[in-house]
Amino acid sequence: MSDSEDEEVPDTRLKIVVLGDGGSGKTSTITRYTLDQFVKSYDQTLGVDFYLNRIVLPGNHNVTLQVCDVGGQNLGGSMLDKYIYGANGFVLLYDITNLQSFQNIEEWMSAVQSCDLSNKPHFALVGNKVDLEHQRAVNRKKHESYAAENNMTSHFISAKTGDSVELCFKRLAADILKIKLSKAEVDGAHRVMKAEVQASKASKASPSVKTRSTKTKSSICIIQ
Image (cartoon, rainbow, N blue to C red; front, side, top):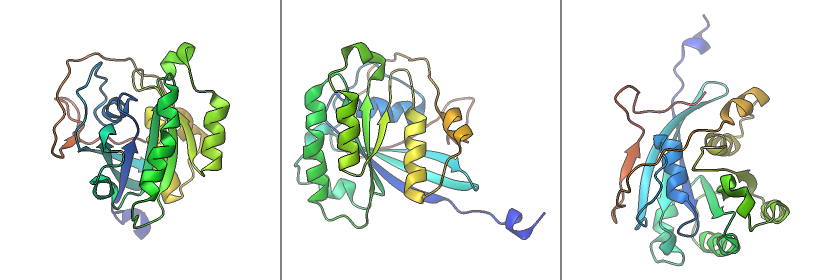
């Protein structure tokens, strides 16, 4: 075995901020990804919550994602610049059945760009609730055009079923680190999960940190 194979690769830490209107599914998307859960109803997120997840990208790159769930009421708020400071990537998320939530993406983009960003973050446009395709109010072509015009990657997901949620965050991390995913890795992450309904739990006004944890699994999720 070579020295390079023996050498331990340190973790790369990325901060991903999820923004969008209240009710668009930000919290349910993040908890589906980090906790492997879907909760049917949520109290409004106040301020910002933090979640952690670990993944492994090609080349044995260990990546820890700090995913920040910013409450929808923070658009134009005085604390937004504090919440997004140091972000490596932004997920601009909307509800495909709610045209207004898509139109308001422009305001979220403007709010982010008005802040003093410490680097050049990656932006991803994410349409949620594809399980409600029959209720779609935002044309796919309009979505793709907006993403292309604003140099954003394009994603469609369902937090309820889990469709493409893991793939979305994996692609985002790979794009930030300029790591190419193989077709097999993309296909392996593109899966549909069964939705689970659990009791509502209140969000906290102060930041909190959540990681995936069960009695039988590690508290850290590694996606390969």
